[in-house]
Picture (cartoon, rainbow, N blue to C red):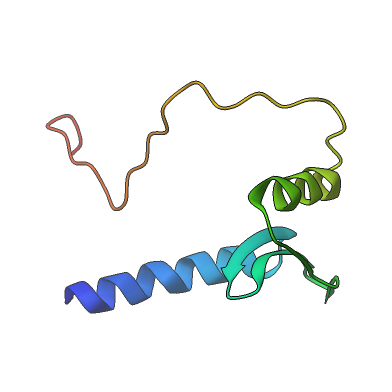
Length: 89
């Protein structure tokens, strides 16, 4: 499988997994930061904000978070693909 086909396969897997889920999306556009809420049965109207803090506040509102949030103080760990170790058959 070529690298490009592998990327497309991963994209299809993500699209299928997310297709029927509820999603919140922040997209940076030429007019500002757009906040979207999508669900399997519809799409709510988006809102555009000129600053990141306003977009983040709207996202937290959509998520139902009403208390103060502190910045993340731990690193993220991400793996794309598989990791093979000597322990797997």
